[in-house]
Length: 146
Length: 323
Ligand SMILES: Nc1nc2c(ncn2[C@@H]2O[C@H](COP(=O)(O)OP(=O)(O)OP(=O)(O)O)[C@@H](O)[C@H]2O)c(=O)[nH]1
Ligand SMILES: [Mg+2]
Image 1 (tube, rainbow over the protein chains, first blue to last red):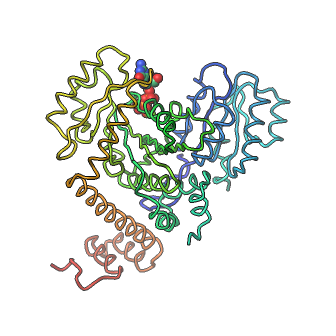
Image 2: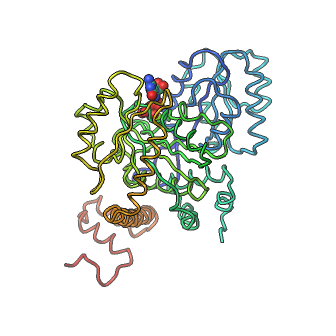
Image 3: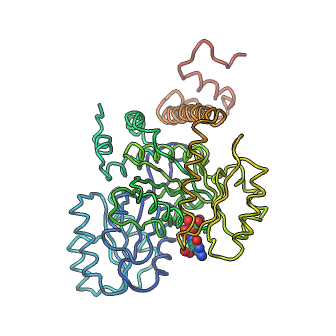
């Protein structure tokens, strides 16, 4: 079911959930991130795809300019405990409200627990289904919270 | 007196306010109309350039280079990058930032990605309003990137005064690009990827064609060879854009066209507002709802029904319905 489908024939000021997908850090490829991006699109969301090698600063700036609802970070490198908190801190210091952060990648349980405490709204390990990711992104979207 | 704090913020240079207002105008929120009215006097001075062209020819890369070039001249640049929405889900993957976002932390650049959201006419308005917000924010140049001929989803003609069509070697002599309507909208051709073989042939070929075609009366499209990879041709591209801007300002036909555009915009706005009123009438007016049911039950035919609904709008004596 598409997220926030338009009411038939009516003009509404609803808009699709907007998600930033970025792969911060210096590692690897972005195949996984692209698969997730397409799945979110097929679920009716607008995905702003930033690609590889983004810094927390450029990700947060993009989230501001794009008026995003969710930032999805894809990480493989193990740098999650520095990069993700940095994004959260920047959101706070720049007074960005209404943007949630979710993350996917290889993140050990104890780190995941700490990240959740810091405010990360969803964490997707390697086995997470696309369905589950879509579901969590949707419920992480502050405008969508019902 | 800007009552709206977002408008106040925008005029004071607050990026977040600009972003939120774009969201409003993009979705045609009723609030947006008030904001646009207030900012309108602050618009009309920026150079608005459209970049159109087939998938992957290097539009974003070229824009990125152009932005660097313009930033050196201390010009502030706004970019609206439009990609199509999926007709199946209504969602979209907006990927232009991958190549555009080369200016981290630079407050003189603002990039916004936009999906077509399946409403062709509506998008032109959303794009145009976004351009205006960026102008009011203080951008000297606003660039609009669209894929394809720029006619299918966003009519780039309605939004930009100078239209650059980006092609690559071996695409220039493709008749398909003719069919795609690219020649009708191109004020300037940019043959990108000139680092690849075949570029000068493509340029020569395009120049020949351009000499017998025109995007406007009295204007023959310029052809510029450039490479976003090597960063060549950017100064020439910009000087052609400036030349075209100067032409548009003094040419009679071009001025007539821009008047025509305003008339068209006005008409579209009225029709949208009418549409909004109709929507709320269809769902809220009990008499109308009753009428819909009577049509559904076969008691009233749809033709009579539509006249009756129209009759519920305040009419004027000179109503054209009885001719
Ligand atoms: N060789 C060469 N490659 C280029 C040049 N400009 C862009 N590219 C490459 O062409 C590909 C597409 O570039 P983009 O800038 O994304 O092209 P685009 O037209 O914006 O693409 P869409 O927005 O998807 O239609 C990328 O892989 C670029 O690196 C160039 O001047 N020379
Ligand atoms: Mg592009």
